[in-house]
Length: 124
Image 1 (cartoon, rainbow, N blue to C red):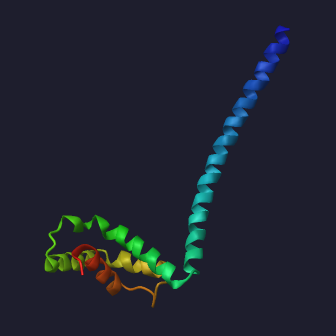
Image 2 (cartoon, rainbow, N blue to C red; image 1 turned 30 degrees about the vertical axis):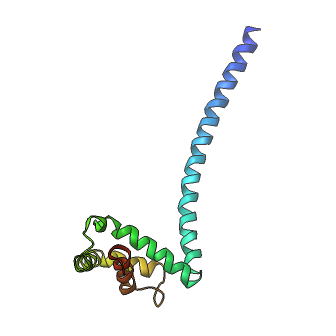
Image 3 (tube, one colour; image 1 turned 120 degrees about the horizontal axis):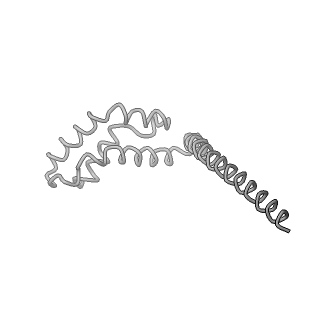
């Protein structure tokens, strides 16, 4: 009876170890699937309607320059415009990269983004 119990516990322990490594491998597969899914979503986005690409580009660009401290600036419109212009100069390459990645030529531009930033933070 002891031999049967010992063998069954040993088999159960080996199966637990196998299960552990299988689950570990599955987590790596999930990570790979997330990377592929994000690339696929960008492809779907690029092939979508221009208004969707424009909104997505605007959101990504706002997130990029959002940490520039616009909310700390006084509501003086001239100061805000100078601050927006300096942010666009600082992040110009990244902003153009976003527009190029999303194929936004003719859909959204840096100048439109500048106007959106000014309207967002300094009022109309």
